[in-house]
Length: 268
Ligand SMILES: Nc1ncnc2c1ncn2[C@@H]1O[C@H](COP(=O)(O)OP(=O)(O)OP(=O)(O)O)[C@@H](O)[C@H]1O
Image (cartoon, rainbow, N blue to C red; front, side):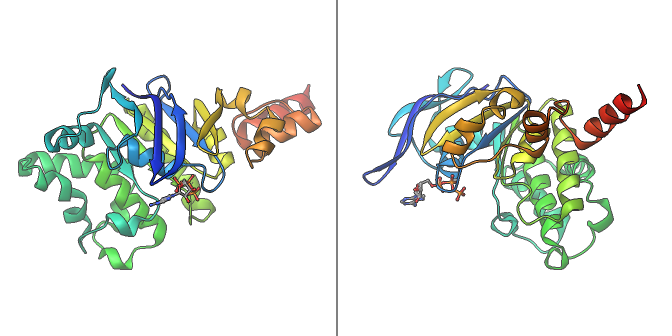
């Protein structure tokens, strides 16, 4: 189980994360929202051990992270991160080699690599373009390759930084389906995003950050109904929640659910 306890972090003399206690084991999909510069990427780099807290701790199964080389290698097999820009995580021109990269580094045998790569390609729905050179892929397709490269680690936790940034509506919808598919495999997903509608739709639990502090946490319905708190944190309500709070529409998780609920009311 991945968590933090009273974690604080400073760059030089500027403290950017203040006393943060997160429990990422409680929900299958956890969202972290907050305006630019509130500390989301810094938090992810603490969670994967690239940065080390000044005080408090990142916890795995209740124990502080071991920052030795071996400890970090082990941790990154349990917690993998997909950064916002897929170019940062792509090293090869052919997709299969790129996805297999971390496993080859770890000396995993080729039969196991083939099994995991096939499974990851299926999960991100990359079969239709897997034989193209990576440089010919669209941004959204590259994101899916980067996610597949993380999934082959078969980690318990997948950290996704801005998974829908730069995606068109259909790419965004595919990403929502990929996240749901990963969660049904029993993995935990932690998403940091400005896409408030995405977080509302796919997450079971949400944390709101403002200037390096947690200012709200709970279920998406509860957190996103607090319009004043969201405004103070530089955020807006998801459109489905706004329709509920401003116009009294039923509170639904997805557009399809809302349209079905409205159709039922009309027919009644
Ligand atoms: N390498 C660094 N050195 C010094 N300060 C940094 C460094 N990286 C980030 N910061 C500062 O730390 C704070 C948090 O930045 P961070 O990138 O974690 O925020 P964020 O929530 O991910 O932002 P965004 O939503 O824009 O991606 C900001 O004030 C930023 O200026």
